[in-house]
Amino acid sequence: MPEPLRAARREPPQAPDTARPPGTAPRSPAPRPRAGWSRWIAAVCAVYVAAQLLLVLPGSGLGWDETVYTSQVSGRIPAATFSAPRARGISFLAAPVAHFTDSPLALRLWMAALSGIGLYVALHLWRRVLPERVLALAGALFAGLWITLFYGPQVMPNLWSAFGALAAVGCFVRAVRDPRDRAALVGLAAGVTVVGLMRPPDAGWLALPLAAVALAVPRWRRPAVLAVLVAGVVLGCAEWVVEAYVRYGGLSERLHSSSAVEGGMGLHFAVDDQVRSLSGRALCRPCTVRWRHKDTSLWWFALPFLAVGGAAVVPRLRRSAVWLAGLTAVSMALPYLFTISYAAPRFLLPTYALLALPVAEFLWWAATRAELAAEGSRLRLRPVAVAVVAVGLCGHLAIQGGVLHTATRNNHRTTQEYRAVADGLHAHGVTAPCTLSGVSAVPISFYTGCTSRQLDGPDRSIDTAGLLARTRQQPVAYLVTGGGRPPAFARAWRSVPLPTPRGARTFRAYLPPAR
Image (cartoon, rainbow, N blue to C red; front, top):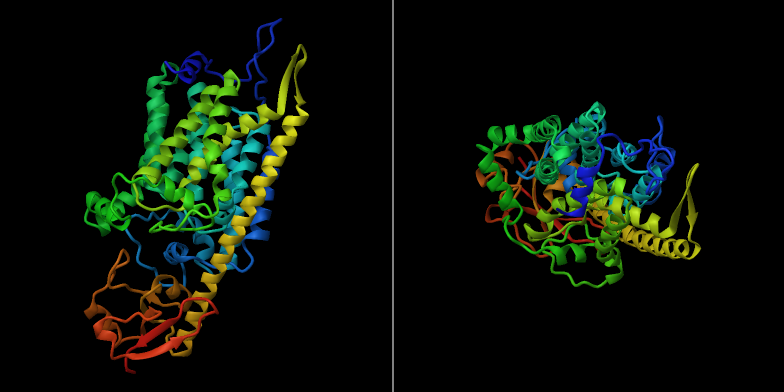
């Protein structure tokens, strides 16, 4: 049997801070959770929110996917077509603000604040399992990634899938160790439910290793834990499944449609795509770009070795928990590395959140040494190791900051393009209620207050006859870029150029004859 599972079998059911027999010294410092706030974790989360406000919010606007999620709960913007793979969890999270305003700044402030709370809760739930110093370092490592910062204030589900997974694994470990820990069962159900609401497939890949380990380790075979795990998956995915029967004709039909939107689910090698996307690309589809900025992916190649190192050096009382975090991280990465034919850095956020725990264990072990004394445990710093770790982390953060700047700059350019096109459409009389179709009609419709209706592609929601019928009821515009041409039915319509920022795509709108 693997060492982590043997360790799990030997673990006492109570939390790892149990008293040791008189006259003996513990093998390692055990975590000693205290009631109340986790000050170091709270400090990390506060810095995380502040960094978003300073580095991400100024000048940012809603991207394509964000406009889709936000429009579902907006009080002013018509709902965009909701394609089969999407889930509504993140829309529910944005609803308290999105229902009253479509201001990107208000949404950004709301989501940034929530992301800080989400990170705090996910880490705090681990305090009975790992020391607070390790958790604070893990939180800093995860929050310091450009991906985590960039998506913190965005209306996107992947970061919240990461928070839910991190909380669920921590609560799972607590629940299997101590049957009296009812709060852990609640946390486990809530964590898995959040993941299911945000990304239903992620909930399955999260539950799979947890259920397998619960069945494989005799001491962890607790029917209540397994029941709560299943209940979390059911609760989280219920809305998505019900909607499958209401809107798509059944679950199998929705899964088939989801696969088509994703480009055909199957055996695909997307590891290299993920590496190329780390230079600041929000989406790499198709991912045919050259791998130019290799320094931006150095941390990605080091991550598995650091995580394995942390799992190897972690004290025995914490070993099974850290190994389980790593196992779950691998499980949640598999579909995004080997079943889809493109990449987006945000897809692996749950994996990065979980792997931050063993990496933090390794870095803490590398920089300190534990000296055990009769009165307790003391930690001594290793000056050379501390210097190496500090220099490495500073270099890592500098690179992440550079990539974050690239990603935010791209977002600003796209936002300016969408807003300029929307202003041009308004100038030509395309005002709500109205309908847009064609290139980038989905996000631009959010900025114009129009409904988006596409004739083809994953957002197909209308046919030619339906679109022509709308021209008799409200303003309609068909958008093309560059030298593109509209469909045959719109070629006789009035063609007008639309203003865009320097260096952006050139847009033209085809408008039907005046009613």
